[in-house]
Amino acid sequence: MGENLAAYYLAMIFNGEVSKETMRGEGLGALDLQLKFRSNFPNTSYNQVAVQVKTGRSFAVWTASKNRFRLQNIKSAHLDKWRTANQPVLLIWVRLDPVVKLYWKLITSKTPLETLSVSENHLLTPASRPEIERLINIHKTPNRHISKIDTHSLASTGDIRDWSKNNFKKLKGTVNCCLGNVRISNYVWRHLTRVTRPQSHIQDSLTALPYIKSFLSAVPHQIQTLSVENTEQDGSIITTQKILAIYRDVRFSDKEFCAVYVRLDERIEYKTDWLKRSLIRQKIHHDLKLESIFRKVTKK
Image 1 (cartoon, rainbow, N blue to C red):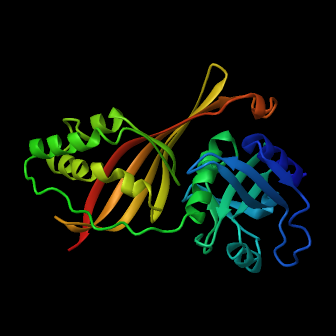
Image 2: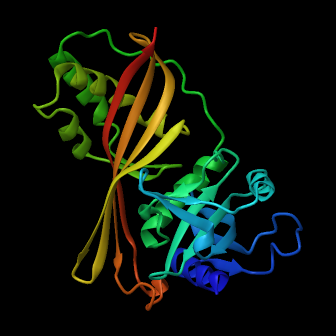
């Protein structure tokens, strides 16, 4: 039951091919399904991911102190094999009681295995597709070193604002990267220059902003999904969330090593009856836009 249910969800969400035969008979750590689907970022291509399905209460326990389910009763030898596989592994836990819910966890060579856990935000729905794709793309995109950034030598907020604005005009548009199709618009400029921000924050943000494409073209050292909200409106489910990408040890000519924080604003909208009506006949509306950038000195 669990495998069939997972296969149905994956076929609906990804509009992809789900096979039950490909991964059979591989011995230790053999997997249940194979998913192949088309991805549009960072370029139009096909992604493949292996799928392992676990069904029932015994595979997870609620940890109230962390507000998460801790995944358990998974053999460490299997986890080790999945981490060294030539493709990512999508671990799906099917919770049957009190209502059927499917939770997901993507396992790659970089996944820490000391404690596997999922939150309520890791439900397998159309809103989870962009995040799963991001993690797959981060896994397969080669790490690229960000060269030292030779920036301005200005001191006043007004001068830095004028310098940054002239450079920002060239950046507007959509950047296709491993994080998604990121839209750069006046939205980020208004956020970074609002009067309630401290002058030092405005200066650091506007100094880093002209180099945003260099950051987006690199793989972040860490990525987090924050402030997830789900609302229903006119027969649709709307998911809004913040994506935080962190780039460490970035050298600037004026401040040496910094951590750079890039925050994206994501909105996903799909019909509430997506499981009953094939998503092939429906559209998932997805918008990912740059909200802010900030640098913080880590060492000199």
